[in-house]
Length: 193
Image (cartoon, helix red, strand yellow):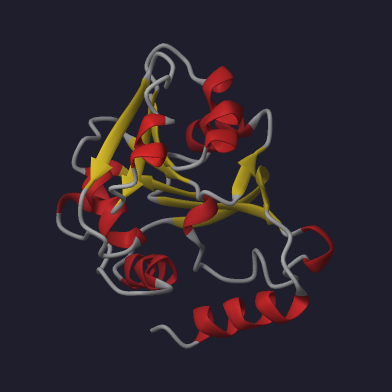
């Protein structure tokens, strides 16, 4: 099965109906001690594991924490501001079986009217729609930096000879942001490594 590290309730609601019997959904609650935030996860459905990560060292540190609980062949990542398509996990399964078990798969990110035209022209993908073979994390976790480690991780893996592919059938809808915010985000990705 696949295991997904995700954060928000609307993301969880989109993923849970897609889970097969061998799948697990991990929600890493990162660095909060706020009682209301912690209470809202108490109703998490079957197959959903809520992991409370007490440190506030950032999203990559929280992802590494969640990876430690994974025992599946692949770990699938998304973010708190992304909503996976209704066929997201099924699309991931098809790409994995149809491509001789790639090491990293980058899915398409629908940014709404601010769509990033460079998608698929690079081997560097971001964690709101990233699928990684679990064995890659045996010796190569995310570096615990503030930004863009997902991009650098993909590039390091590619340079080490790992199979890195993209597939437009694996779709998440990213929260629409202003053009200036989107531009700053892509500039940050371009200068992180």
